[in-house]
Length: 500
Ligand SMILES: *Cc1c(COP(=O)(O)O)cnc(C)c1O
Ligand SMILES: [Zn+2]
Image (cartoon, rainbow, N blue to C red; front, side):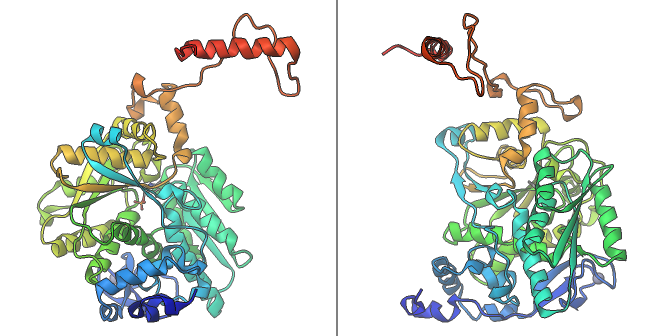
């Protein structure tokens, strides 16, 4: 494309150049460390890190309105590296040259407005942002595109070789890590640790299909996490959990896309996010803060974090209104259909505490809220959403249940519009839908199916048909005509069809 055809004020910035000066910053002792090596925690105090651009102030030399134009026009370019999360290169990984960027089709997931039936049922105007439409069918691809592009950059520089990417996972992190690692063969291999029987069959099939080494560990995610942490402390491996601050950077793209898709006008906007290890909400908060700081948006949207009552340590922490009295207590999780968020001791909790405080401060009022929902509500709302044209996973059910709860509690006002996150594709968690439809939830979930939401296939095999077709054994002639006629009669009866 001919850059001369674009408005002059965007031309020089349309194709991003390497810029910026990224550093790891400790949230606790505020010490800073260079990014030439992979760090996961502060070498001085052991706290989690975030990546900060020491040159961020320079981004402000370009007016917010111009940034808006740059991002809007950049969408027209045909450069693969800019088609995903790196459309926002200056805010995500400005030190990476475009040729080092790994792009597998992540990001720019659609926002689908709820239909009139669903809006009337909930009494709220809202959109699902379907992060299940990422390559490995969850939002985790955003963070992996960032983390693996950085690894690629280090590999090309020659500062590392032969990487073993390792992660603990509630299912989706491992699917995403294994996918990106397999693309980077032969320099990168991957190994994933999953809690035995605590991921869905679809999620288990993903890293296996990508050729990763898959280990199943007794216990829950929190136990797997401890093992990967031990491995990454003692051996030369690259940790791909959201403890890795590069993951957070990539996931900030979710906020940038919402801003862009709403034309950078975020007045009366509410964004609803499910919380597990709290990496996603960290990224969403940080993303909006960065766009706000750079003047690209003038309003910080209201953020609502949702947790199931079976895995709610973040919600519990914020139950205490007095900030000075809050104390984080990890919890033991109970079974949850929002299984990817079944985490009792979120790694990103210190990031959340620091960012929520800053977000409320910059907003000038309380602008981050936390709600809790039941397993029953998660399932009921997921099925209701999907019976109205969505492809929400159980976590998407959780965000809708959370939005409804927040409206009832007065947190969401009548004139507000919500964007709610369906973090994965419905198909990854269809086993929970089957359990609902077949009324076989183990009692510890506390889910009782509502008859009007249940569904099951109906086998049509009229008693008076003695011959039916079978694979390799088709019917012909009169017996086939009889089969077609009897089966269609039977279906017409079930559907109460009226003859023409
Ligand atoms: C990982 C995951 C979550 C939880 O996100 P965190 O960043 O761990 O809070 C929610 N939903 C799905 C589908 C996930 O894969
Ligand atoms: Zn520190």
